[in-house]
Image (cartoon, rainbow, N blue to C red; front, top):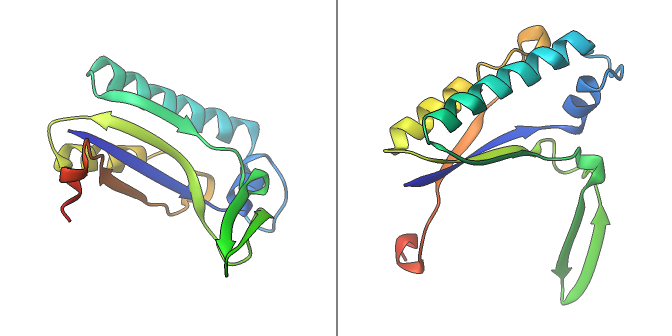
Length: 136
């Protein structure tokens, strides 16, 4: 079964990771290097176990564009969005034996070193192969 593990961050998180002073924890180049090393190690472990299908980080929310329709009128809004504190920051698609194993992987990813020991979370969602898998 394939699962998508979704991680989240805010524009402030992205700013802090690039060393900008937001009044919070400012990341040093060493902090960023530790995060990249950790993620590289976990991704290599998943690849060697045959569980990694794909992983990507996403650009900061400031580089986001939202398109939709409101009252029948199309709209486009550039991000970040005041109504949204956290946005999708990256994802992993893993293929593993169970939801529990996908959850273990997400917990491992949550052990990434973060300056100041910040809190984080990830959503784990099964990927459906067909409309029948949706359950409705």
